[in-house]
Amino acid sequence: MGVETGETEAGETQVAIMEAAFRALCTHGYSNLTIDRINGEFDKSKSLLYYHYDDKDEILLNLLDYTVGQFTIEDTVDPSDDPDIRLQTLIEEILPWTLDAEPRSFQIALHELRSQALSHEEYRERFARFDQFMSSSIAEIIADGIEEDVFRQVDTERAAEHIYATIAGAMFRRITTDDESAIRTARQGLNEYIDSYLITGED
Amino acid sequence: MGVETGETEAGETQVAIMEAAFRALCTHGYSNLTIDRINGEFDKSKSLLYYHYDDKDEILLNLLDYTVGQFTIEDTVDPSDDPDIRLQTLIEEILPWTLDAEPRSFQIALHELRSQALSHEEYRERFARFDQFMSSSIAEIIADGIEEDVFRQVDTERAAEHIYATIAGAMFRRITTDDESAIRTARQGLNEYIDSYLITGED
Image (cartoon, rainbow over all chains, first blue to last red; front, side):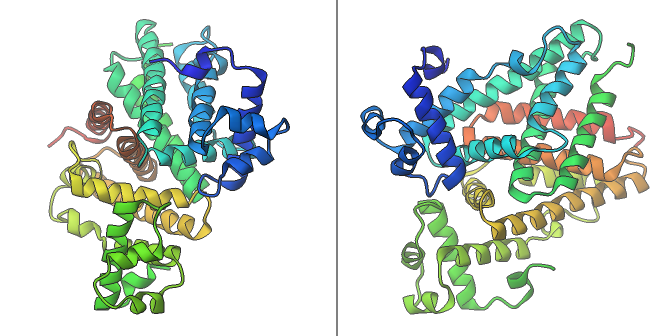
């Protein structure tokens, strides 16, 4: 449980290394990434980076812990909003109607790391935790919505896993195909699901 | 348009190369795959393989065309079944309740290739076509279901893209996290969507 780096006070050097690793990952992609290329994005003394890390995966796993450790639902979703608004805000954050260059780079970098989970146990563990965090955040919003009579009495876990799978699938398709028209249609389909299956229509 | 290799008569040598490439991809993963390792899985004269291909991506793109070219919905789904059965059969094929070792290797290999689409235009094109094929196959089943009064009068494209995104997201999560419990819950959620949103309940 918990995310190691996020829980400790990440020092200035650590943050600089994480930022360098992220820039290098976006520029070169995972396969072509080397510790030297991360160094190339790193302003401070190169020896510092070699002092802290043995290989690129150690840096990248730390980058993942650092990024996920920083992320809280409250940064994205205002807890004082109604549950239906909170759900739409979270969806818009992960699967926006249009994806700008910067969040796009971020999603591509995240998926570059995620595809390492196909063969690396340590990446797999991180993404298992990340997905559980995301789907339980959605489940909490749904549970609040049921309590406040905004949503119907659905099975919260099933509805949350369903919504999260839909968002994740559309997001992955977006960055591996650029088929924006399909993504818009999928998002409209998701909205129809929420309107017809979740929302009580009593507000 | 269409899939080049799948449309021509793939010769015996080509098929043997494709099978060797698939085995080598499953064994070594994309990053560690080399044309020599594909050769290692190839029974025939090694020079044949070098004669046909310049690099591993050329072989893998061909493998993708060959695999997708072979796949037809009718191999999986009996066209004489009712549309609701056809839809469930297709979902069970892509997102089975339990994933055996062989289809698991196949899904992992396919996703190894798919993640190349994050940075390679040629992979991107292939997967854009593949996704369009899958979602339009689902849309056809839904359209048939509406015509036969098995399904409600929903927007077929939106429902199809929604279902395909859900399946794809859950499938990707399954092979990058092993969280089978979450996948079962997501599939139950999808079934509830189909039962409550699509099925008319008039049969």
